[in-house]
Image (cartoon, rainbow, N blue to C red; front, side, top):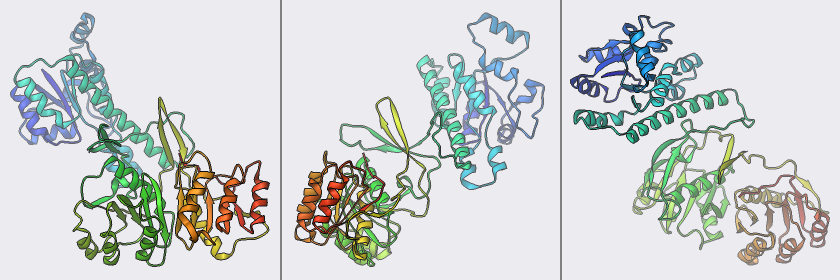
Length: 506
């Protein structure tokens, strides 16, 4: 038997190659791999001894030769293939062990384009694809974790089934597809290409299995974008607590996206990806207290996020209630000492500095929907009523508008003094979430503001808000009944602003 070995990741390679040699497998290798194996006492036949052609272009061309690919691609059950191998003195290659140049690692450590380009592998993917195509006759290994399994099979002279061979081929095709997708993603980002590509080929790397999915009977896995920015939930540092669940990760991501909207200290409480309380204050502990009071029922078992460091004072307040996850840019040591008493509480530390990814996509049966991120707050702020908002109303309107953007449609938010009083989410009409918010706000609704993620199709919801004492409204506008809605606002002396921008969230 003959094995061709050319790897970048040399984990476990020497032991593997020695065992192959002990099984009388002749080893063929290239460049750095050949030198590495020889330095470790192995006999190696170099590729150029087979091709009778040296490596050229500083190693860019080594294995792209008929003597190599013919040896890999020849079908052993085809008489004409075997005759051609004999005619050109080509010895078949039975095992191909290849993994690819460290493209991702190079991108992560340098901005030097020439160095990055040199780490785009050409010969490696070609050999893997050739071997995987001919998997019935050639064993293809791209994952060092398969070394031990293969040696065990060969040592025991066990038959390697066609199904097992096909699984190795599948791994190889996945390996090269992932590699090429990373390269195309790099070039797209390098060119700042934001238009939708003709073909969309995202690629992700498995981080770990989750205990289960949304429900215990569902299996789930967490995958990571190989070039994800540091400011991402998958890169959050878990300082304490149980393993994050599928739902924890969804909720934490929703909390992170919302809390990033605000420059001043902000606390966000999330339940089932919807905000149940949001508040801003110069003191982050006060912001959390307001958030808690906004909905002390729904926050139970929820997730809270902060855009400031969690200190001992805040930690003490957090420890008084049952929470699944806390998320913040940092924690003081005193805070961690306080929170450590709640051993199951998952504590996440996350970088807030990096920019968002340009696209957002959602899975549907048979495909995906791809869209740009909802990063536009408004086209304009147009006062459409007789009365303009006061400065304090305007501040609360912008606050509520940022919150409603992150609530599932149909969404309504009532707020006052940079604190939510009621958040109505996911309803099939605009009246019901308005009624819910008014009920939640109670007497506090007087002098508060309301944000609606889309226009009011009828004036009924606004009438409910008006009768509760709400004094200002922000909404996109654009309904055929806008004038009726404006007339109701004027009737109740409500200041109303149109944004021209809708914030549906499905």
